Image (cartoon, each protein chain N blue to C red):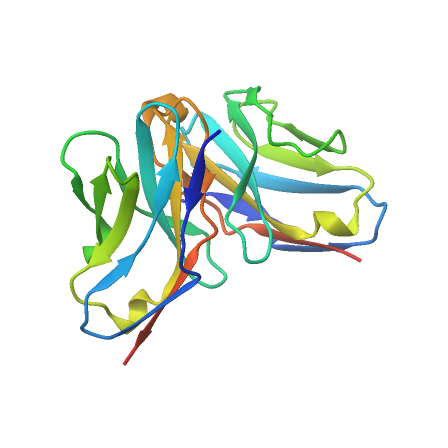
Length: 113
Length: 116
């Protein structure tokens, strides 16, 4: 069985500061890893994915994520947070693409002005 | 182009009633997924279609839940004899091809189902 853990229900940062949203996973075989963001009353929006290759993946809106195989982690990062980044963030994993996505519980990111 | 659309956006029904939720995927996307998202949780997989056939329905919680995609485009999720525990947001997603192609999934806005 595959699973995703997002250990923080909420992350608070001040605008302009770097942010990290944590994600760890468990899967058999090679993981396909995704980050999605959910704004109120809107569907999930794809941010970025890791399939293979470079461990640092760059995505939409200045976000990036670092794949760490030894720590089974895929943390989401951004060098300088914006108030408009405030939203619910979901990490998801698929086992080498041969299974459907399993999502974490989500982390609410709050960026204060 | 148009994204994934879902109708209705909200559905309130009474316990024991039958409901249908509709999903219109992005044109040309062969794979279609249904998820259920309860309050404070991430989306939980229900069923996945590749074309017209259900390739994986392992997430359907019981036989009250059924989904179809007769022409390989629009899909309908059907819930019989609804229970209060079925209350959730039902999300639909589509991707260009199935999971093995690692295509990202594009999500609709969801249908909020409330069972009284």
